[in-house]
Structures are given as structure tokens and as C-alpha cells.
Image: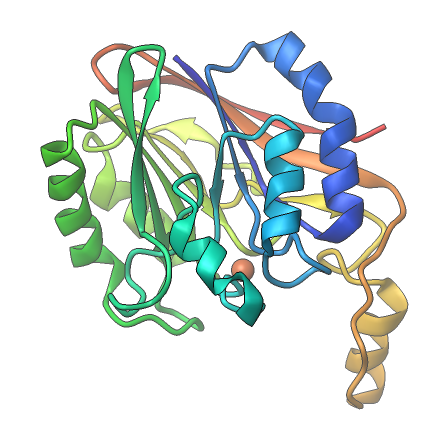
Length: 259
Ligand code: FE2
């Protein structure tokens, strides 16, 4: 089974770039399941039903999220209802949405788990014991292969989570920083890992924000409105191959212009 995972889709430019390049990527890589992080899909921050539908229409089957998932209040009902979208499992239990999902991929049950780091981000519970509990729950629900999106800021926490889950999940990929890392590999226990997949958005930007806006804030230390950058959109993704035993065989990084 091959899973294609696409890093944080940033705003309209990210969504349009994805819609443009994904049909070609699907043809080339023939993934069995396409997952994308959509937490920056709506105007660069958060997600709405309309932007999620656009991502699904582009060819994504499951959406993961992170710290901005609740930015748009009118999306709460959608987040709660949509079975193809997950939000971090270590958020307060009563919050809209679900932390994990089980989907059928050609007769194989795939568990998809979303977790948030606790360093420099706000969570209700540590991601480590939450991961243990959620893995037990996914197994009870019949998941044969588990994929984890760990939305986290700090590299050491992500690498530690990789070791925590090595041999217990098929893949754990990091998201949130929008900068792809060069450490993609299969860990000794058979778990595909990367600290951060990167983003699908403008490369001529500061993490997807117009250079002028973000740089201006650093230089002047004055508040600034952040507009989503549009130029030179790239797709940052990984393709992960796994066997029937639920272990990864390889992970390949995909970084390319969206046009
Ligand atoms: Fe984030």
C-alpha cells in the first residue's frame, strides 16, 4: 500500500496549486490513499467546509489538522460531522471533531491518528500517553495499518515521538513548521518517519505569509496583518510504501513546483 501525504496546504494559493498538481502526482505515484494537512487551508489559518470540500475535490481522501483547526467558528458543526477530517486527539475530549478515524483502503483498514505536540502549543493531555491509548483504540476498531500526523513545533519532541511509536505504527510524519526536513527514513522497527513534511504554498514567502508582512514585523516589532503569499507555489509531500504486516518499506520525499 502506498500513502501519499501532503504537507500543510496554505490558503487559496496552496489549494489551487494542489488541485493543479495532484492529478499528475496521482498518475505518477498511484497512491492507494491520499492524506493532507488542511489546518491552514482557509485564508492561511484554519479550515472551513468550503475549503475542505475543495481539498477533497482535488483528490485528497483524508484531512488532518492542528492548532488552527478551531479558528473558524462556523466550521465547528462541519468538523464534528465530517468523518474524513481529524483534529488532534489530545485536545479536550468534548471539542468538535474526532482525533482518529479508520478508513477502508482496498479491503485494508487504515487508522489515521492526529496528535499535537505539547511544546509551544496548547493541548489537554500529553501526546505520548494519548498515542498509546489511541493505538489501543484503533486496534480495537480493526485498524491493520496506522498513519500518524504529529502536528508539532519542536524537532526533539517529533523525533522522540518517532522512537516512541517505532514498530507500532506504519508511519509518523511531522507537520506545522512548514519547512521540510531532510531526515525521512524508515526507523529500525519499521516505522516511516520525517520530522516535518513542509507545506503546500508559496516558496517566496515566510512560511506562506507575504515576505513584506512577516519580515516587517521582525524588523519593526510592530503589529502587521499577515496576507497569504501567492508566488511560486510548491507542493511538499512524502510517499510511503508499506507491506501487509503494517510496517513501512520506504519513504520518499516529494518537493516540486505546483505548475
Ligand atoms: Fe500548525
